[in-house]
Length: 226
Image (cartoon, rainbow, N blue to C red; front, top):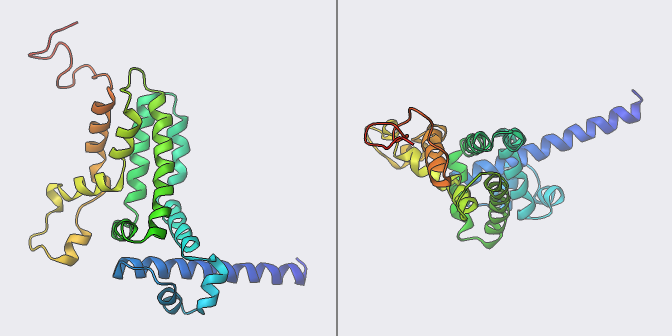
């Protein structure tokens, strides 16, 4: 490796480390305060405010980078596996699982981020764009389902939302702390523990065929056999 190539590689590594530190600072600040100030992020990351602007151009750019980091950590690349599955119902199941993995990366941060989106137009736009991508994915999967209702895409989009998983996780029997407090409420419940419930809801709402031997299947007690 030439000295020039080495220096360029070293500079890129330094830039990457700085960007990662800024994103981590944004994530921590958002989780702790429910707000996102570029000045506060710069102080937490121990960089100049101008550095944050240079790297991300705006709060929107920083939010996009934060969402990308959460997506990478949450395994959103596995969506290709869901969309590529030959069985349409298994594809829906995989979609539910991947979304649960994403939402479970940092529920406290995601909860704060989505709450802030209702108050801050700039944050709201970023969230809306990300939700639109999930809506498009839901539409693709719904379009493959035989006999699905006309609102199948909307139903799948709603059922795979953070709000659905978060609500179901908070209702889990193992989610209730012995002595609830504000701090514990932020942490209780497992998003991924809600996967079976969301999967059942999605299959029922989208008209999945009932498997033989399952409750309510034809031929079961009280059900006419075909």
